Image (cartoon, rainbow, N blue to C red; front, side):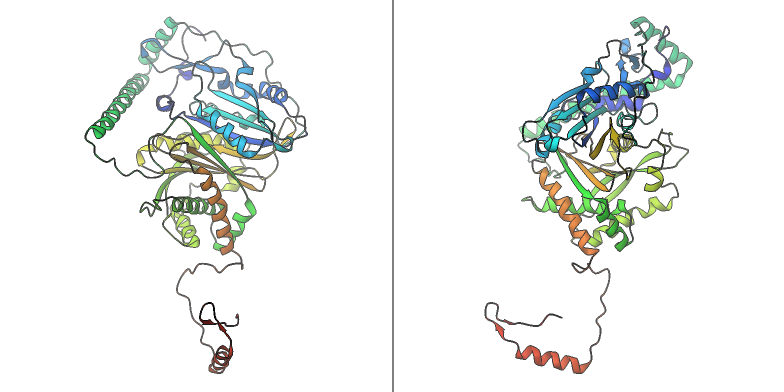
Amino acid sequence: MDGRADMKERLRPRDLAFLATDSPTTPMHNATLEVFEGGSGFDHARALALVEDRISYVPRYRQRLQYVPGQLANPVWVDDTEFDLTYHVRRSALPRPGTMDQLRELTARIVSRPLDRSRPLWEVYVIEGLEKGRIAILSKSHQILVDGVETVDIGQVVLDVDPDQGPLGLDEEWRPRRTPTPTSLILGAITDNLESPRTLVQTVRSGAGAVTRRAESVVTRVGQVAGVLSARRPAVVSPVNGELSQQRRIVTVATDLADYRTIRRAHQTTVNDVVLATVTGALRGWLMTRDEALYGIRKLKAIVPMSVIDDELEATSLGTQVIGHEVNLPVGEVSPVVRLLQVSYSFNGHRETGRAVGAQRLTGIAGFAPTTFHALGSRVAARELRRGFHVSVTNVPGPQFPLYAAGAQMLETYPIHPLLPGHALSIGVTSYDGQVFYGITADRNLVPDADILGQCVLETLEELKDTATDVRPRAPRGRKKVAQKPQKKTQQKTQKKAAAPRDTSSGTKKTEKK
């Protein structure tokens, strides 16, 4: 840097709020778990070389935060003069036999750990030992690192369409800029505040917000102590909300995209509607397996980040903006078709605005990658926390063709979203190469049965698929008209029924199937 911290490198107030939310119980980083084919020679060494070759496209990944003395201004991004790529791209392995259950358990332990704030806020784990010789890549990046404006997710630059894509070699001579001194940081803060009153206002607001958050934390603890001393029963807590622990559970589910398209055609909805209806039915099934059943809950409020075109919102590198759409998931509804239609109706308003971006258009954006959109979706959910929703669900359409990393084909990709304060569940969904992948993040203590929720996803999808085929009758969408049969046929049927032998086990007459 040149004498003082560049204002363009200063952390924005909204990012500072994300940083303040970060805690041992709510580490605010997004993660992605990807599984690659075996037998291609893809290993830690090749993954390290790949990241080294592409990291220049995401320069923020070689920067760390530098705080300003006296908090005269927001922190600034500075180059990490001791940047060590081998620290960030790590090697791990599963014990035999290397099952998906073991991979999920390892993933849960890794995403539970906060990132080191003294270094660039990201990590990549190359996990070997998976069944069939496959390799898994687990990457996690802090929410303030991937804003879709200055920085995209590293997963967007390491994947290729061509399996034979060679090194790009953008800058082999990268050298970190000199770290600003405390004096230059202070002078830079004073200058920025004088040149831009808006910067001063933002700094004051950021400081006031931090004080408010600390005060709210103290009040919460005092209230908890008072409740214990007065021996009052705590308020009833929703099964998807509560005080979080420091540990997570990760559930992954792989399904076929063709099933969603079949259901979409049969009921004239969208794939996104079917995904949300599947989530709704899965939540319903999971709640009913608990002793408390549905807790009297008829609906769960969800925040669903949606892509729009709106010039009044902040532009992103994806060519679209992302907003939070509120949806009531009808978990109390018995009929899977009615649940689907209710979810579909809730999106009509969004589709009719003219700002909505269709899945085909979204995936057609040059350089589009689901990992960046998931990062933006989790940021939107965090900003909408005051709206009092129960769960966030981010569904991102991905490319319907294979992607590669250093020549190895990616077979599966699971988004893993962070848990917001007080929220025990977060669900990410990505479609890729003919499949739909669910990544469910759950608090280890509040949701010890998260694997049941994953099983309910499969059961609900099968239930919806049955309504779109001749295997099982569809749920009625209105009053059913009863056809009048000729009197002669009715008499013949009565005679046959009278002649049929009795079923001694039930006491009823056996009748012929129509």
